[in-house]
Image: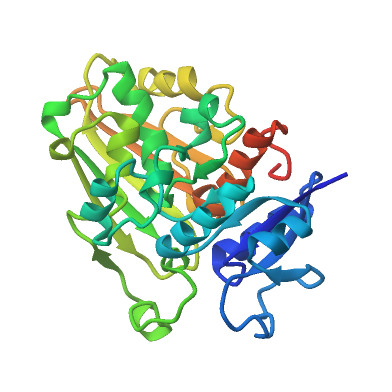
Length: 335
């Protein structure tokens, strides 16, 4: 027997990745859940053929025997749907930012919108599995992390916990992402002529993903500078993090901090001392690849973290969280 899993937002890039992963998962049967008013719209070319499509209503979902619903939807849609599904006993994994920040006030500050399902914030379990695994089992609502915070948090949390960053000197995260991170909805900013042969920074000093990194790492906002940049590729995130190290004698000692934290993690790959990952190595996988280098004379340190924004940064991590929530093997359907 397989578990039935619904996908809302199945037309978007993350939704398409969910279709691919869940269709190959040995324990799941995916369903497409139509939340739009016009449910007669023909499936888009990206949709996987052969998957059943039904209305996204609690009655239809329960009748189909769907136990878990993945919300690859904008935050306002996720709030509305989660508020309807969870009281019916349907578990939810939300890929939006709707339930990541803990309070309605924090959400409004960073997302510039009112939170319409504040009562669910206390129920939501935010999870980067490598950092929050113990909280996931049996959860009713999982808040999947953002793509930029996934890479940055995995890179920074072990360093902060080990006390090897000179925090007074500040930390800089230079993050570059492919165009799919902006979603599939057409816009002038992400059109071909605007993006090709171009390179641009955006949301400078007020990116909505910053509070997730602070929450996961324990850093304060004044200690952390983050800049997101759009590069003319379809997918992938590469983050270069700069800081002053303390208490470390060489690059191997810096790498040892990560080996202690992630040496047994199935989805974090650590490069040999001084070697650096790239996007080609992680795209279409659920891995986060990390490389480090330390200049012994000056204490300057660089960490490079790479993920696929649609897999480890979205759909793959959502399935990783679902596996933990349901008591399945964490790597099932992902390796």
